[in-house]
Amino acid sequence: MKSTLLKMSHICKSYPGVKAVNDVSIDLFAGEILGIMGENGAGKSTLIKLLAGAEKKDSGEIYIDEKKVDINSPKTSQENGVSVIYQELITMDTLSVAENIFVGQLPVNKVTKLIDWKAAQKKSTEVLALLNSNIKPKSIVATLSVYEKQIVEIAKAIHKNAKVVVMDEPTAALSEKDSKSLFKVIENLKNQGVGIIYISHRIEEVFKISDRITVMRDGKLIATKQTKDVEKKEIISMMIGRELNQFFPEIKSEKKGVMMKVSDLNINGIIENISFEVKKGEILGIFGLVGSGCLNIARALIGVDDIDQGEIHINGKKTSIKNPKNALKNNIGFIPIDRKNEGLTLNFSVKQNLTLQSIDELGSSFIIQESIENSIAEKWVKKLDIKTPNIEVEVKTLSGGNQQKIVLGKTLEINPEILVIVEPTRGIDVGAKMDIYKMLENLCKEGVAIILVSTDVPEILSISNRVLVVSNGKIRKEFKKGEANQQELLYEASLN
Image 1 (spheres, rainbow, N blue to C red):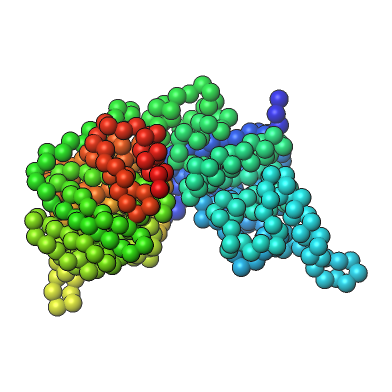
Image 2: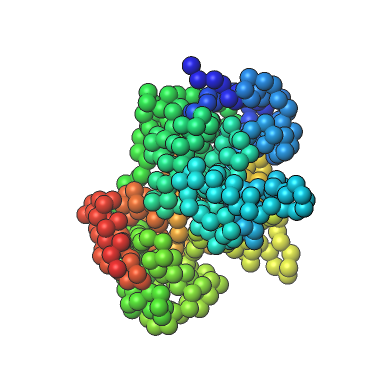
């Protein structure tokens, strides 16, 4: 029987107005991959912060190698053999690979008392070789890909003799090829007896690599199941607390007439002769691989990217969209890919963010009518089921799914006739995804024309009425709903 590497027993952690972790107990065995799943706000991240020493628990006990430990700082966590690799990698990009791996522990020449760079590079090469990586120790980390940076972080964990490695959404920014390479590295760590906690919203990959799956919801432990003995729909039902009757809604276009027509749109060297139309009550999907030009099309439609040639007609009238403010005046709403940097003001409250784009409607003479502001915020919190202690808390304290709902609510408050939305469900949990799909369905019923840019193949095939496949800045093919499967879509997107 495998030894127990980690045991977290009856862990509790509260913040003002929120019980983030409520009597949660998990264990992890040597050479095991434990998947942890749950909606945003389920308590996963808080539990890991407690293990990493980034936060202090209110109560409960932590055992490593069956010995009770007091983890009260990141240093004590690392000293006890725990290494956490966060989704937003904490690498020192201006330093070399070797300096990152040996940070704070660079070997010193016994005679000169100076850093022994040859030894550091040799040891770095040895550690990287254990991961089947040929990354050069002298390479500056800023020049590496996201996948290579993750390998450096894993190498750092191995160097520090980590017994427990936690990975938080490790494939969120990886290509399919790099994800497969990472899975091989994880399997290698498992075979060496390392215990791995794997947190991901991607249920397919959790089922692919995990031995057991723990589900959390609303700060509580719901269940831990052997992966081989449980079905995906059962895990999803435990995550969201309700039956999964229909993940993707059946969105039918009533084809009420053309809302937007785009003709021969060009951005020199980026997109070429882009032409399409989108009808009222329709979702037009735009799909392509990274760098295909899809994002540039979306940005051009709302005036972020300048076009060199082409025309845009809205309701049959030629329209010039020079900037995002101009887009708003033409009733075009935009949900950006980067909600934290482009969609939200993180230090502002929920209320302030939800009313930011409609601030002109909140009063006059530079005086905001607080009652109107509160009313708008409460309306969207209720309508979108935004989980927040109140409308006064800072948005940065909320989960990713709830942040995305705030971006959506802020945009819908302006009553857009056209909604350009990029990667609407990126990095959010299955429950929040279902809520957003339902909102898109309702918008279609109201006659809003939606342009959806997404790299999520099942998503774009399931909820789009039509899909335009873009490659190398050009539209390669149009599929009507039901005409293409995932393989055909990816094939067309890969053509030059």
